Image (cartoon, rainbow, N blue to C red; front, top):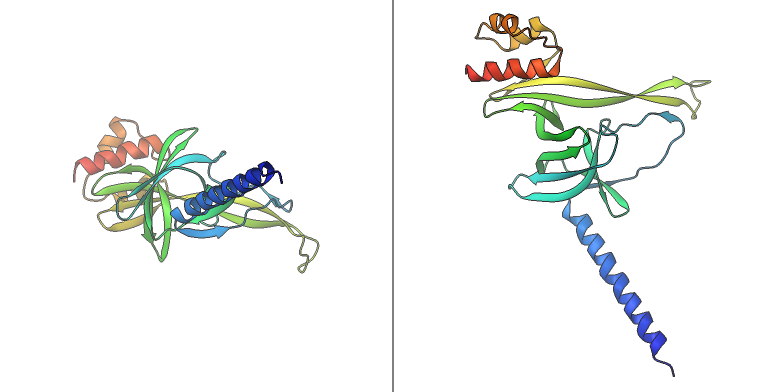
Length: 219
């Protein structure tokens, strides 16, 4: 009896067991729910924040960091979706507090936020011990075409939207990018001379960041 084919069969089986075990262990490393992602030709656009799946570091509530995670942000679910082998998982928003994403536009930082009954990750444009300027990235799936009310083949368009938030101490305030409203939230200091002197336009992110940073320096 030729034992060589049997030897190779046993080695291949052992290799499969090891690889599957490693994949399952990696899948269990991230806490969250598995999600199904599939193409849908009735939907125009996609809910993802980044044009490409990006590498990221994830920090949990105990300060532990998980490196080299490939993910994207789903603006409809308001959750990070992580690729693990051939599976996708929605990041547990109650276990992880910070995500640092290496995007095509540079490193972006997201922090866990509990606001108005929701828990989500918000992009941090500026953050100190007392003040943070945040963006909540959302998206809606809007019906754009159907023949009748009961038509199950309705077509949808995904429309993304950003909501700005300012966190001062433990309080979080929603904010439109209008100077009058921004000054109302950043109360207690006369910021108009600084805005005028530096020709700031708060509708621009970089100018809004500068103003919030200046406000923080006066605290």
